[in-house]
Amino acid sequence: MDREFPPDFLWGAATASYQIEGAVAEDGRTPSIWDTLCRRPGAILNGDTGDVAADHYHRWPEDLDHIVRLGLDAYRFSIAWPRVQPHGSGPFHQAGLDFYARLVDGLLERDIKPVITMYHWDLPQELEDAGGWPVRDTALRFEEYAYGIVAALGDRVHTWTTLNEPWCSAYLGYSSGVHAPGRTEPAAALAAVHHLNLAHGLGGRVVRELAPHAQLSVTLNLHVVRPDNPESAADRDAVRQIDALANRAFLGPMLDAAYPADLLADTASLTDWSFVRPGDEQIIAVPLDTLGVNYYSTQRVTRWSGEGPKAASDGHGASEHSAWPAAQTVEWLEQPGPYTAMGWNIDPGGITELLLRLHAEYSALPLMITENGSAFHDVVSPDGAVHDPERTAYLRDHLNAVAEAREKGADVRGYFVWSLLDNFEWAYGYDRRFGIIRVDYDTQVRTWKDSAHWYQQRVAGAHGAA
Ligand code: FCB
Image (tube, rainbow, N blue to C red; front, side):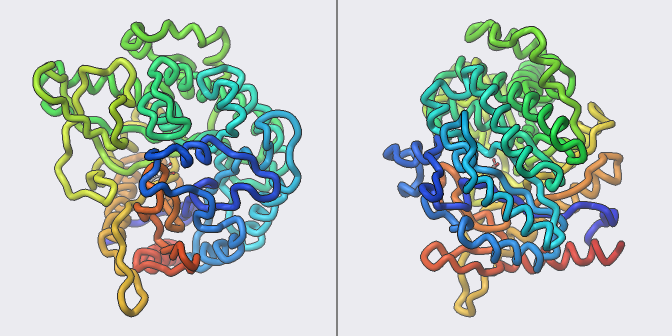
């Protein structure tokens, strides 16, 4: 039985620029850190790159029509910084701004609300060459970038989201190195955490100033981390330590205007956090209209005894370098299945737990599921259809789990499936397919999977109930 959502609930789908656009060298776009990482041998599965991706840069009108056919209220996408400000500072590039203006207008003409992520990981390479997120200047450059794009698109945008998953940018980009720019410097990763937070605050202030009628948001991939043995104080402390690095490093400054004391203490061997300057935390705590939540799976930790091999099933890709600064004694245990093609465990209860935690801690802040979905090794049937019952079940069960959280009080305002289209899944290239619409990468033909038909019906049912 499908649970109910209110009539004004926002139904959507999400994508990100580097994952779908392609056209990486067109109309003045310069390389981002992902173009560079894609050229590093062994960094991306099968040597894939975002050069063509789903060719959305040329096929966007067709893609918007799919969104209309799905019956969605909103579309979440991101702006490629190197397309609109090729050097990461200084002049803006009109052709790049025009592309996003056409996209926004195309959505509005179709009665779809644009939800824009300013930064979904494609930092201009020139800014990485100047130090990247570990240096403060990158946050100041982000503020300038925000001025340019909000001035161009402003109030036509329903929601401005400053950052997508700063956790990944900081820790996968600078500690484990599985994401761009592929650096393995844990202390630099902590500086990146702060400068991403600062960029969020500075960019948020720009939205408040230039687009006072738009909603302001940020999207976090908060982790649902459970102790292996809830009776063990050591395991509970491992959860506390990971919760600080994964969740409170962002929630603390953004929502409480302060970094948590235990985070600073746990990481003291790496940094004294002197890059946090007086007043920064107040900037970071810019008031938000919604908090974006991305959710895929859960994790389980224990305090490692120091003997024998240490499990590292944190779900964040294989690297000799940990994504978790100063957390060498935390062991990540494999979760019970079932699993998706990412190897991530399927646990809809985790999304309910996360939403209820946020509701308990920040009851006045509305929540939005900005990503939820699953990769499976899809097969095209002889009749041309893609029967993906696991993906449909995943979406159905997680939506019901969101509804359960709502029934228990969580103020969840919308849900965006990840993803509208199959796309470039970062270090996994095109091997992992998250779309509800299949992309044939040889022909660029889009085919609705069964899950897309199901989602269309689900959304129609919810709207009809209105
Ligand atoms: C999230 C990213 C998104 C996509 C999904 C599967 O971490 O925000 O771009 O790759 O995971």
